[in-house]
Amino acid sequence: MPGSTRSIIVLLVLIVPAFWGSDQELTAQVDSSKVYKSIEKASENPGEVFHLKLKWNRYESFPIEIFQFKNLISLNLDRNRIDTIPDEISKLKSLERLSVEFNNLVYVSPKIAQLNNLKELKLGDNEIATLPESMGKLQNLEILSLWSNNIVEVPGSFKNLSALKTVDLRHIRHTEAEQGAIRAMLPNNIELKFSTTCNCD
Image 1 (spheres, rainbow, N blue to C red):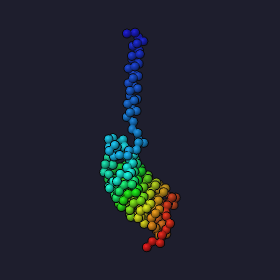
Image 2 (cartoon, rainbow, N blue to C red; image 1 turned 60 degrees about the vertical axis):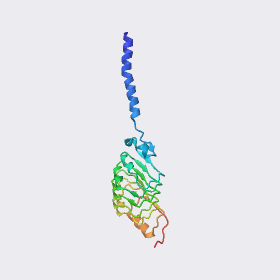
Image 3 (tube, helix red, strand yellow; image 1 turned 180 degrees about the vertical axis):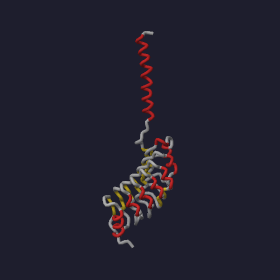
Protein backbone atom coordinates (compact mmCIF):
# COMPACT_ATOMS: atom_id res chain seq x y z
CA MET A 1 0.00 0.00 0.00
CA PRO A 2 1.52 3.38 -1.01
CA GLY A 3 2.56 5.62 1.85
CA SER A 4 0.16 8.42 0.88
CA THR A 5 -2.84 6.05 0.88
CA ARG A 6 -1.83 4.67 4.25
CA SER A 7 -1.61 8.21 5.65
CA ILE A 8 -5.12 9.07 4.40
CA ILE A 9 -6.57 5.94 5.98
CA VAL A 10 -4.90 6.76 9.30
CA LEU A 11 -6.31 10.29 9.18
CA LEU A 12 -9.81 9.00 8.47
CA VAL A 13 -9.55 6.57 11.36
CA LEU A 14 -8.71 9.49 13.64
CA ILE A 15 -11.08 12.12 12.23
CA VAL A 16 -14.31 10.15 11.68
CA PRO A 17 -14.71 9.05 15.32
CA ALA A 18 -14.08 12.64 16.40
CA PHE A 19 -16.93 13.91 14.23
CA TRP A 20 -19.15 11.01 15.31
CA GLY A 21 -18.48 11.84 18.93
CA SER A 22 -19.45 15.46 18.37
CA ASP A 23 -22.73 14.41 16.76
CA GLN A 24 -23.46 12.10 19.64
CA GLU A 25 -22.82 14.89 22.11
CA LEU A 26 -25.15 17.22 20.22
CA THR A 27 -27.83 14.55 20.18
CA ALA A 28 -27.43 14.01 23.91
CA GLN A 29 -27.87 17.69 24.77
CA VAL A 30 -31.11 18.47 26.58
CA ASP A 31 -33.29 21.38 25.48
CA SER A 32 -33.80 23.08 28.84
CA SER A 33 -36.09 25.71 27.27
CA LYS A 34 -38.69 23.24 25.98
CA VAL A 35 -42.16 23.68 27.49
CA TYR A 36 -44.17 20.47 27.91
CA LYS A 37 -47.96 20.77 27.75
CA SER A 38 -48.78 17.14 28.47
CA ILE A 39 -47.86 14.99 31.46
CA GLU A 40 -47.95 11.93 29.23
CA LYS A 41 -45.37 13.37 26.84
CA ALA A 42 -43.20 14.71 29.64
CA SER A 43 -43.22 11.32 31.38
CA GLU A 44 -41.28 9.79 28.49
CA ASN A 45 -38.10 11.50 29.77
CA PRO A 46 -38.77 12.83 33.30
CA GLY A 47 -35.20 13.95 33.89
CA GLU A 48 -35.29 16.24 30.85
CA VAL A 49 -38.42 18.15 31.88
CA PHE A 50 -37.76 21.69 33.09
CA HIS A 51 -40.99 23.49 32.18
CA LEU A 52 -44.59 22.30 32.42
CA LYS A 53 -47.62 24.30 31.28
CA LEU A 54 -50.83 22.45 32.13
CA LYS A 55 -53.57 25.06 31.81
CA TRP A 56 -57.22 24.23 31.09
CA ASN A 57 -56.96 20.51 31.96
CA ARG A 58 -59.87 20.36 34.43
CA TYR A 59 -57.69 18.87 37.13
CA GLU A 60 -59.73 18.44 40.32
CA SER A 61 -56.57 17.93 42.39
CA PHE A 62 -52.84 18.55 42.11
CA PRO A 63 -51.57 15.86 39.67
CA ILE A 64 -49.26 13.54 41.62
CA GLU A 65 -47.45 12.62 38.38
CA ILE A 66 -45.80 16.04 38.46
CA PHE A 67 -43.62 15.05 41.39
CA GLN A 68 -41.53 12.74 39.21
CA PHE A 69 -40.04 15.77 37.44
CA LYS A 70 -37.20 16.48 39.85
CA ASN A 71 -35.57 19.11 37.60
CA LEU A 72 -38.70 21.18 37.10
CA ILE A 73 -38.01 24.93 37.04
CA SER A 74 -41.42 26.33 36.12
CA LEU A 75 -44.91 24.90 36.62
CA ASN A 76 -48.14 26.49 35.38
CA LEU A 77 -51.43 24.94 36.51
CA ASP A 78 -53.67 27.93 35.82
CA ARG A 79 -57.38 27.54 35.07
CA ASN A 80 -58.01 24.14 36.58
CA ARG A 81 -60.12 23.14 39.61
CA ILE A 82 -57.37 22.37 42.11
CA ASP A 83 -58.22 23.06 45.78
CA THR A 84 -54.96 22.08 47.52
CA ILE A 85 -51.22 22.49 47.09
CA PRO A 86 -50.11 19.29 48.88
CA ASP A 87 -47.12 18.44 51.05
CA GLU A 88 -45.45 16.71 48.11
CA ILE A 89 -44.76 20.11 46.56
CA SER A 90 -41.54 20.06 48.61
CA LYS A 91 -40.16 17.42 46.23
CA LEU A 92 -39.73 19.99 43.45
CA LYS A 93 -36.49 21.38 44.85
CA SER A 94 -35.45 23.16 41.63
CA LEU A 95 -38.75 25.02 41.17
CA GLU A 96 -38.36 28.77 40.56
CA ARG A 97 -41.80 29.70 39.24
CA LEU A 98 -45.15 28.29 40.33
CA SER A 99 -48.51 29.52 39.07
CA VAL A 100 -51.82 28.05 40.24
CA GLU A 101 -54.14 30.96 39.41
CA PHE A 102 -57.85 30.69 38.50
CA ASN A 103 -58.39 27.50 40.52
CA ASN A 104 -60.34 26.60 43.69
CA LEU A 105 -57.43 26.74 46.12
CA VAL A 106 -58.28 26.91 49.79
CA TYR A 107 -55.13 25.30 51.22
CA VAL A 108 -51.40 25.75 50.67
CA SER A 109 -49.15 23.24 52.43
CA PRO A 110 -46.57 24.70 54.86
CA LYS A 111 -44.03 22.54 53.06
CA ILE A 112 -44.05 25.01 50.18
CA ALA A 113 -41.45 26.80 52.32
CA GLN A 114 -38.96 24.07 51.38
CA LEU A 115 -38.78 25.39 47.81
CA ASN A 116 -35.59 27.32 48.45
CA ASN A 117 -35.20 28.38 44.80
CA LEU A 118 -38.73 29.75 44.39
CA LYS A 119 -38.70 33.27 42.96
CA GLU A 120 -42.25 33.67 41.70
CA LEU A 121 -45.47 32.41 43.28
CA LYS A 122 -48.81 33.20 41.65
CA LEU A 123 -51.98 32.17 43.48
CA GLY A 124 -54.42 34.79 42.22
CA ASP A 125 -58.16 34.23 41.83
CA ASN A 126 -58.68 31.43 44.34
CA GLU A 127 -60.45 30.96 47.68
CA ILE A 128 -57.45 31.20 50.03
CA ALA A 129 -58.18 32.76 53.43
CA THR A 130 -54.93 32.00 55.25
CA LEU A 131 -51.35 31.28 54.22
CA PRO A 132 -48.80 29.19 56.14
CA GLU A 133 -46.49 31.05 58.51
CA SER A 134 -43.62 29.01 57.08
CA MET A 135 -43.73 30.99 53.83
CA GLY A 136 -41.52 33.56 55.51
CA LYS A 137 -38.65 31.16 54.83
CA LEU A 138 -38.85 31.68 51.05
CA GLN A 139 -35.73 33.82 51.01
CA ASN A 140 -35.49 34.01 47.20
CA LEU A 141 -39.14 34.91 46.60
CA GLU A 142 -39.42 38.08 44.50
CA ILE A 143 -42.98 38.07 43.14
CA LEU A 144 -46.05 37.06 45.15
CA SER A 145 -49.45 37.28 43.49
CA LEU A 146 -52.46 36.80 45.79
CA TRP A 147 -55.08 38.95 44.10
CA SER A 148 -58.77 38.02 44.34
CA ASN A 149 -58.60 35.72 47.36
CA ASN A 150 -60.06 36.01 50.87
CA ILE A 151 -56.81 37.00 52.56
CA VAL A 152 -57.37 39.69 55.18
CA GLU A 153 -54.05 39.25 56.95
CA VAL A 154 -50.71 37.97 55.75
CA PRO A 155 -48.42 35.92 58.03
CA GLY A 156 -46.11 37.93 60.28
CA SER A 157 -43.18 35.95 58.92
CA PHE A 158 -43.54 37.82 55.61
CA LYS A 159 -41.38 40.55 57.12
CA ASN A 160 -38.46 38.14 56.59
CA LEU A 161 -38.92 37.94 52.81
CA SER A 162 -35.84 40.03 52.06
CA ALA A 163 -35.84 39.42 48.27
CA LEU A 164 -39.49 40.39 47.81
CA LYS A 165 -40.16 43.00 45.11
CA THR A 166 -43.89 42.78 44.38
CA VAL A 167 -46.98 41.67 46.30
CA ASP A 168 -50.36 41.82 44.54
CA LEU A 169 -53.35 41.95 46.91
CA ARG A 170 -55.85 43.61 44.61
CA HIS A 171 -59.54 42.66 44.53
CA ILE A 172 -59.55 41.68 48.19
CA ARG A 173 -61.91 43.36 50.66
CA HIS A 174 -59.59 45.26 53.00
CA THR A 175 -60.31 48.08 55.38
CA GLU A 176 -57.89 50.98 55.52
CA ALA A 177 -56.59 49.65 58.85
CA GLU A 178 -55.98 46.19 57.41
CA GLN A 179 -54.05 47.59 54.48
CA GLY A 180 -52.05 49.76 56.87
CA ALA A 181 -51.12 46.75 58.99
CA ILE A 182 -49.89 44.86 55.94
CA ARG A 183 -47.88 47.86 54.71
CA ALA A 184 -46.26 48.24 58.12
CA MET A 185 -45.21 44.60 58.18
CA LEU A 186 -43.70 44.28 54.71
CA PRO A 187 -40.40 45.85 53.60
CA ASN A 188 -40.75 49.50 52.55
CA ASN A 189 -39.05 49.11 49.18
CA ILE A 190 -41.49 46.63 47.62
CA GLU A 191 -44.32 47.31 45.18
CA LEU A 192 -47.51 46.60 47.11
CA LYS A 193 -50.72 46.50 45.08
CA PHE A 194 -54.09 47.06 46.76
CA SER A 195 -57.58 47.87 45.53
CA THR A 196 -59.65 50.68 47.06
CA THR A 197 -60.42 50.11 50.73
CA CYS A 198 -63.90 49.15 51.88
CA ASN A 199 -66.06 49.79 54.91
CA CYS A 200 -66.22 46.05 55.50
CA ASP A 201 -68.38 44.68 58.31
